[in-house]
Image (cartoon, rainbow, N blue to C red; front, side, top):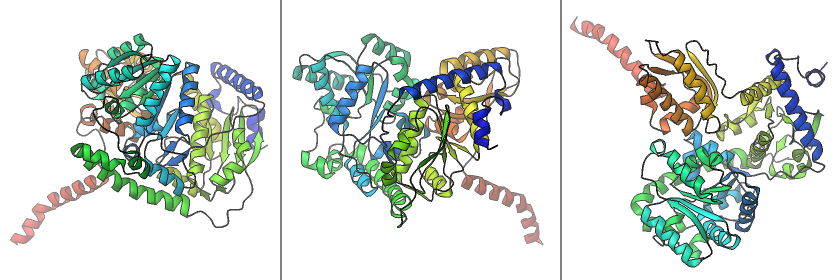
Length: 554
């Protein structure tokens, strides 16, 4: 009996980790929902494959299409957030795991930079046009005045925000500006989040324009967009300065020629010159690598068998992509990829010898769409070409990888259990406390309830309370705030927390927040390899120094 047939015929008992009755019941409910969704779709919706540039998926939309998508988002009344990303976003995301995750999960990532349009052509999937925030926001304000949508402005200085609102209301008398607020300049974690969130919730806007700078605006949106209930939140950068006429837009010919950056440098040289110089150096080198790895190394003979469905069962499907997973093959096999949604998807990738930027975009979009349906994408035995592309794009944290179907099943069940039982903590814990899963805005309150119970159970413990973070795969700024909150809570009870073994993603978030030393202590985090080797050499030299002196004396 094959692994897949065993899986299909014995969906509960093949893995011991799901023997619990409540887990089996949970799986049955999820399977029924997935089957119902799948049968309801007579013709699967075609997947819109984004172009991936340095690990960031860009939506291939025009300005008019973006406005249409925003109208659909407002009509749905569900919470969404949109990012207008330029070269600086990509450079920052390469060093900031949280920002990268925000860009991966955004409902739309718009191309706010002409150099990115040029790069998309070189990568074989041209983006239709640049959709700059400074072009989009005025159009959305015009639409809001026409449709009666409520608008809220967050960010900018108080004078600039007031002037922007006054200008827009003078231009569009019917515009409903339900509020604007300029928070005091503080770090993200020091902001009065509850006050700001309550102010926005009370205003009940349809459109929220966030102008706090990158990546602060994007991280703030990611922390709050679910709880705010605003249909569309957009990070708009410095657009509020243009609305207030504090800064001028470059002439149209400079915008189209990609030289608008020069116009802005002339206006704000002290703020922008060093940033643009750094971005050009970092982005240029990285893009050359992507072109070489994922475009120019394309096999000359790209003819290969199309994608096929190896096996399909009510709750999962196994798909075998072509050997060359490129934009052309994805377009040819679009029916296969559209049918991948609605159930867990296993991609057999051991034979793939080349994947381009569109192929990576397909994997990212499949992952995004499946997660929305409570399903998972599993990469089965990915080839070295796929692994190299995933590492180059810094997407190791995004995909689940399995060596065979049994391991894939265990991964899926573990993730389902983790999702249904957030957080994976026990209030009746032993030391060291083991924290697992992800700590994000989506689960932080539940996580804190259990963590607080844990800390209370050690109220009379005189030694430092160790908390092992090695099982925490991702943490956003809300999660960093929880670590700080737990530390302060323990201190108020006379205790002391000691965070141990942070995973690379957690360590990255703490470093970006500049709380690494505070939360981990001076010796709590691993040092860079070069520093470790240098210190080791110095220690060896120090140990040998007395012997060298003796030899010299003799």
